[in-house]
Amino acid sequence: MNLTWHNTALTKQKRASIKGQKACVLWFTGLSASGKSTLANAVELRLFELNRHTYLLDGDNLRHGLNKDLSFDEHSRTENIRRLAELCKLFVDSGLIVLSAFISPFKKDRDMARALFDEGEFIEIFVDTPLELCEQRDPKGLYKKARNKEIDNFTGISSPYERPQNPQIHIADSDINKNVEKIITYLKKGAFINA
Image (cartoon, rainbow, N blue to C red; front, side, top):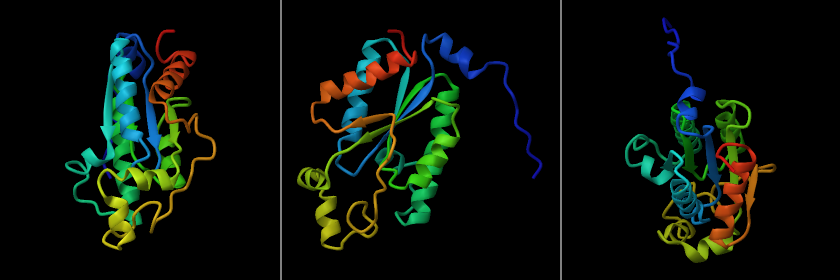
């Protein structure tokens, strides 16, 4: 392969510094209907109020475009996460705080994603909502379809979810405002945003 990485004059640190922040990815993981996207959206709104520069990537939204050619078998799920992680890396390189809401059920895929980033830039946020509550919520009717065998390889039903063992942030509370502040506090302590 005749490819060479082209270095640019501007670095991630320089791009982030003019935004008054440190670039990172907030990687929200959890079951379908755990509240990942809702929490990521609320955190992004709070960061916007603090004049931070962000971008939110949602797994479902990206399957409408970038990843619309992928199915839901294990190989496709791994490729889905690989593409999303590479996209997050580009956004982090631009100096942004990236919020990514992906089920990302397999530890090996989350580890692969983490390995793309510099130490501390990948902040895993485990939205730890019990399966029973996710099924009760079921806003898209997916659990019902999975239980009726209308959907194959559905995480938590016919495909496993490997719980993060040491996430940087563990969310197990239903109070969204409290959860937003927990994440903002982490970002302030880590100097990703000004305290």
